[in-house]
Length: 200
Image (cartoon, rainbow, N blue to C red; front, top):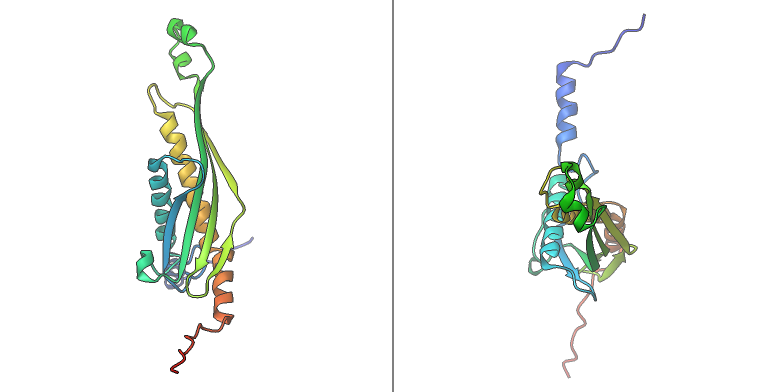
């Protein structure tokens, strides 16, 4: 008969502490502070969506402790994450026509619609000290929401889902391989030296 090996309580506590330590869920945090910019591309994106994406990115980064802190660009961050949003569109489509919906007796017919939100986005990471830049591929975030109850604002829910997805992927891009690679390249780059002026 096989017996399960039980860890001592002290070992379990040490393991739990390690899992809860900053950066444990996603590796060691980046050894620098970071700034976030969410910008609009050539085609208009609602200001409310720009703000929601900014909030989602901040929450994702802070919940993972993957940098030493979030600061403004005037505070000389070690790395800057820019997310460019472009070409946003949304649509709510119904299975029934307006006339059919007004005559429908079944309450479920009033829930037979779906809201779709779609936006193009790209992430860019830069190191101000060296000017090094890395860019992700341009992606499209597309989300759909069907109502769970009568009167639910599925259009708003679809926008929030898209913002959450972008926030999660942008955080992974910054705190994952791209951000670490850029900082490693920075450490190999000689520090900038001011050229002495000619005193003639």
